[in-house]
Length: 447
Image (cartoon, rainbow, N blue to C red; front, side, top):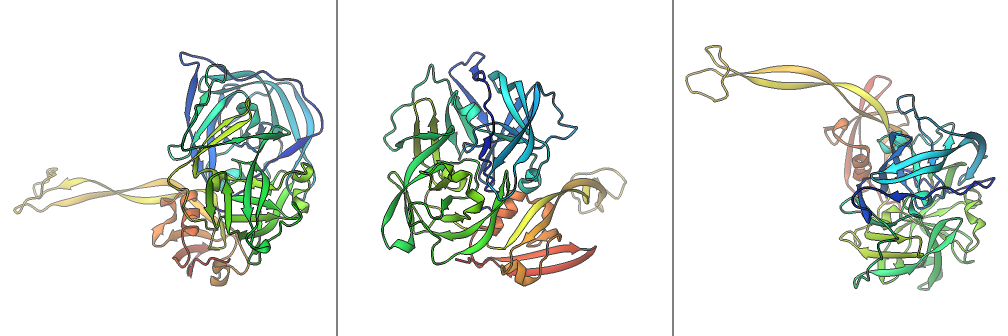
């Protein structure tokens, strides 16, 4: 698993809002619209223009409202008809103060709605952009998906939005079709899980389809009476929710079955009861299917007809791993890096020459430039992990990873290194209080 946020901002609004306008298809092609997306830590990041300002939003099937939680002066937008509210979601904390803004114009390519509600969190408690290594302004889910049929192609990183008035999903021989069940405008699906605590028995479960969660699976302990953490597990911080930190146990289960598709030994997080008290309002819910499972399929979602279609891709049988380092790394702004630049060659006659010669002496002309590059630091070290035992600490600035400058990686790439396979050697050069240090350790599968 890429350890970043299983960021599930499922939440509850303590008032009702008026009906909003739907997304409409404009332009020459009023049947479908294609949108490229970034896949960061198993999460889908799309461009969403609000009141003329293009921002980056996570497409999250686990939320029923559009939330803006990161807005700087540079990204400022005009907001209409504002009132104060409270939001509550996953986590152990209190409700958070927010604003409700009405009559906003949303646009994705030529998909447009001119009357949308926007919930604005006044303080960005998630620090999402630092945790993802990319600027993330908010999340959108039901507000968009209720008006379209969407195909999510994780391999090509393309969303195709279809006009439900002019398009019908085709039958697919190699696909599996599922009925969707909705509760508070969030889609649920039936699937089977096998736990080592109840021998070989498979349990029928109802799981939220949650493209806003980076984990593979979440299961709620105590539901179905027999769902509980397997024999081998470790305690961890699972992520951040709207109402605070989410705690639980990380483990693996023998098998997960989605229709005819079987996934062996997927990683599963078993959530603390306190942190999920709001999510458990839907008594039939047993957990969630997150991005680390969804990305192994091509997925069609048709909210209007309450249907979902899954077609496996080449990564279906790929392994499931947690972050095996124990390091939680975040983006830490930019630093100036001195880089050498070769500008050409001078021969013995003082003339520029791109060809070598036996009779002439060729000298390369070098100059240096200073370029801003990304910087990364350690935000937390899990106690008892390989990195913890090696001596790494919170706040350490990462300078090199396995001999390569850290700025040559993306944050997603760094997390990928830590989640690749057990026993891989990791060498880090860090800076602590201005002093350089070197550490090395082996990735260790803890379950």
